[in-house]
Structure formats: structure tokens, C-alpha cells
Image 1 (cartoon, rainbow, N blue to C red):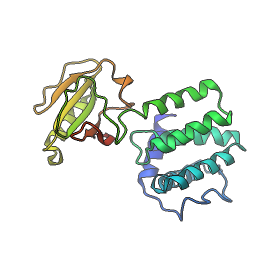
Image 2: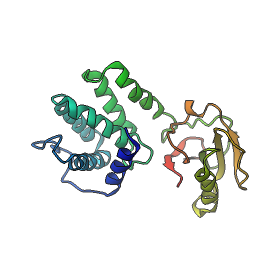
Image 3: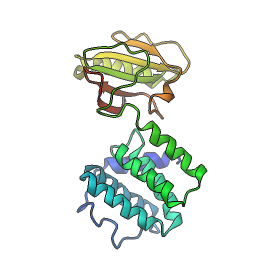
Length: 232
């Protein structure tokens, strides 16, 4: 998906549009209209409702949507891209391992996308399992700790990543946290005080990252207290 499309959908999700409920959301409405932006807005509303709905209702609504999509191949391709942006993208407030897993499950089962087209979604579904909230964290090189830990993942060639180090260090909500920066890519290691710096050449294998900087928070027992979030 083009970067501009991802940004447009994320902005639509952030707008907080309301609707009556998740059940029957797609009844008697077209999947695609002449105005594609209107269709995208409708899906954004659906995504917002789905992440807030009870799990059983959300999954049932996803199945009903896919049942309808199987009748329109063009819509199927468009909506699967929108689902990728809504339920996977780190900037989306509707990011959801549960709903993304359901979407990819249907993509594979429906047989409309071929093997090569499914492969990127399958790979992202695997990535989405890394450092999920409630799971034991995977941070290569991090020593065992008995305190809350703020983990920032950054690219050493990224100016905004270096800015994130300063911004997070100055934020009082993280005063009680150990601060660890996992540095990827090429460049000189930052020197902002208050951080423990780790180098990771294999970060893509353990971090679900498509953009930096992102951070997550570990509880004192080493489990993920808060999942990935944009740092700026």
C-alpha cells in the first residue's frame, strides 16, 4: 500500500467516527461507491467499532465482511489493504493482533489472493506476535531487571529517533522506569544521558517494526505492559 493511503486511513481512524454498532454493519450497504474516500471512511468506522467490540462480536463481523467481499474480487483486494493499514500499522489506533490474525486467516482460506500475495500478510501476522501485551518480552541483550523498563527502538541514521531519546527522557511519566534504547542500522551511537544503549543487528527478527522510533513498556516481571507505540 502506498504510504499516502496508509496515512489517510490512519487519520480517518483517529477522527473517532461513530456508528450504531458492529452487528449488521455491512447489511444493505455497498462495499465500494463511486467516491472511494466514502467507502474508506465507512471501513474506518467499522475498524474503530471492531476493536472496541466484544471479541466474539468483532470476529463474527469480520467473517460477515469477508463473506461479502468474496462476491467482489476488486473490493476484496482493496479491503485487505485497508485491513493491513487499520489492524497492523503501528500508527493506527485500531492496531489489533486478534483482528489482523482473523483477516489473514480468511485471506488464506478464501483463495482469492494467490500464495505470493498472501505471503506479506502471513509474514506480518508472525511479526505481530512479537512482544505482545502480556507476553514475556524479547529484547536481545537486555539484562534481567526487577523494575519497569521503557524500551525505545531506533534507527541510528534517523534524526527523529535521536529526538525521541530526549523527548522520552524528559517526560515525567517515565521517571520510575529504566530506559533502554535498542539501536539498529548504521551511524554513531547516541549519547543522550539516562539511557542504556544496546546494539541489535537482528532487530527485524524480534521486533515488529516498520517505522522508527517506537517504544514499548515492560513490567517489573519482564512481561510487556504496553505494546508498541510511536515515540513521536
